[in-house]
Image (cartoon, rainbow, N blue to C red):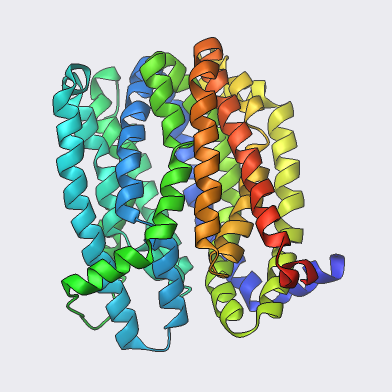
Length: 421
């Protein structure tokens, strides 16, 4: 194990990941710096209303992504030496995402207009809409496919610094809830503006005019991945959304605080998985044995580290919550403890699903797994929320995340090459 880790740390892939970590540090720290301020200025009810609106807009973000964050990144990685093919993939993907964005604007607008409570908060929903606009415009998948993750991370780091500064300067009371909703929802949108200011290209040098057939084929080719991603949203956004419908904005705020702190630990693995994915795509296409060896080395590095972080989070949950939320959010400590295993569970699932199953073409099996997980979560969520409110939503999410890696390992273990690797 030690020798394997030593070789990995000396590799170019490790150098890329560590370089990415250096820039991602700001992406990790900025939300944690601004979170205690927003929790206190907006009150649990105000903060909870923003999180509830973001949950609804999160469905639209999943829809406009349509699985392209993985499939387009994979296609660009494979075609990285063919500029014409890269341009075709890029502009076809952007055209598809633009069409889906237009459809989302119509659908979400109709949902907000149809409900009286939603109409009363339409400005908050509109401000949170930049969550969808930004995710559609910022081509993270393009940078990932070309292994230019340092540039993408730099853009997002500068954007979050700008947003953090604006939050402290402009958000002063619960009356600034719309502005706070915009700032909380616009990192990728501001990232596009930052890239333009820094003159970092967000597209290939050449242009390709996609046809309707190109867009249709792209949507069809990414449909399995989209359905898998959409199914996973059943136990990500739905927990917040259903909790808000069945309980109060305060319960949503307690759940969101616990989940965001858990997500901060979980995000520590993102630079490694993002750096490994394009390299794994090439190896699975040319040398599967080397690809599986790479997966094994990454697992030895990530899993023990995140397991220790999850344990620390469980033990010190009350202290962590008091630092970030104060006494008004003390009940979020139990939420955080229930969800403490999630960073490890999601890390295992990310390695198995994104790095292995997608590159082995097992997207249909992955779809069935996510559908099963989502359905289980939907069955458990209402009764658990009814009896335990925020704790119930946390318990439902933890159960769902536990099932995912188990089912993925079962699928992969049936492949002799995986057992051998």
